[in-house]
Length: 235
Image (cartoon, rainbow, N blue to C red; front, side, top):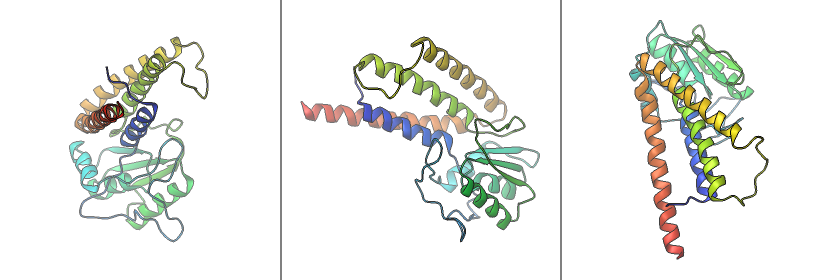
């Protein structure tokens, strides 16, 4: 049995969250104002409400829009819009209407200015809000849901596993009704993962979710191997 340290589990959690939540997009032939402007300059790695901001490879995110077969009749939502790359690219390069939801007020304002400078202000709307509060039920293209709910389910299972193998580790708070409440949480996330996978499949975008999940599996394998080697060296 391979036992992961707490630091390794937390590192994997942060890495998977970064992969699953933020997926910025631009066309390979066009560049947006990703470095900010005179009013606001975002820093790579700056903290947000739940995640940090790191721009993603342009070719990968363009491929995501191609796989999803975005068309002018679609409504594309970007959850965690950052500087607006997804929304701008969807509107400018694919003709879709796009909405970005960004928690950071300054970043949201920058994203809207980037849309204005890119000439797609009529098709792009950036909302300064919380993705857990805002309504995006009208979306026809939304990539992150299967990975998002799957990630939360795995986090719940990992934390219960960690508590079982290392019960004496200090914890910042006590979960009420343990283990009933965590089990209900994991089952709910599993159902939402299943539902979002069916939806993504119907939209032809399921490959995107599997690509991101595969990246997380590779990261897990790498961390397990590294931890195992470190344990062997310490013997």
